[in-house]
Image (cartoon, rainbow, N blue to C red):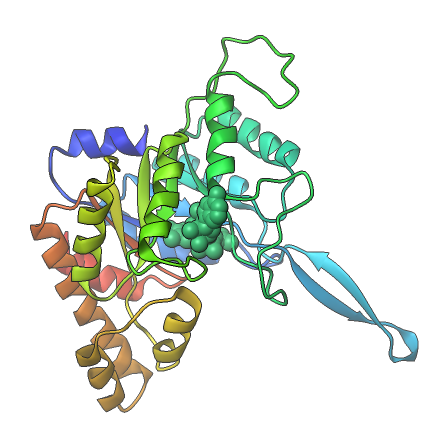
Length: 318
Ligand code: FAD
């Protein structure tokens, strides 16, 4: 079922959902299930499955030489989606990226999703590769998420890339895109970033999921500003509990966000990561309860591969 239909059917009740990251290749999928199992009692109507950018790896050769190769360390997004549908009877949402994919390869991913009966896809540009300063689109690939949304919308109308197929067997994907309550890191201004978000919606996006934020006011300001420029699709807040001391520096740096001073002070007082995890849980519970009271359609949690803290939050909120 489409995310937008799940939201309609919930009739104002806030839904619970979360995002998972495919395991590194060579790791058993059981580890993933062990983290998902405890969250299923909160009935997530959908679960997002991320797609990772490819990365450079270096292989030692005789004579001390290093051979550079490109690989995707966490493949399997579509396969995991199929297994989630089968095992949990929930709607999986594969993340589809511009970065590292030609448009042709993207079409193949979408065709696989259509055959599997996947109704939703999240269209994202992707970040720069780890050792690159800026995002470089793939040759023959999509440059911005709005271009990718355009490609998916075209496919929904039966328009394949080489334009010679006449079909009534169209996909009908519900398309999600990313939004940034504190602005995307590369964007020159909040207003410019919002205009680019509107371009994604105008190209066919049906809903938005936000980057994580730790101050709900940032989200409320964002949805108001989005409405003012004519963005009328659901905007789902993304919430992540802080779990380790390093998050204090990494999250602002990687995700271009501010941490409220009260939260920073609480974390700085903690003796170890166990105490920090608890502070993170309590902060996310308070955030979630306020969002729920404000009537948000869904609260989407970034699980980052571990679910005990998400379960602790869900047990108090849903
Ligand atoms: P875009 O919407 O293309 O925007 C990128 C930048 O370009 C912005 O600064 C925007 O303002 C600007 N821009 C957009 N259109 C134009 C234009 N026409 N001209 C000039 N500038 C423009 N990354 C992954 O690698 N895998 C994932 O699975 C993944 N999942 C995510 C899920 C969510 C909910 C979120 C919020 C992010 C996710 N990301 C993921 C990270 C995302 O790929 C990065 O934040 C990336 O840097 C931007 O992606 P986007 O889709 O927002 O890009």
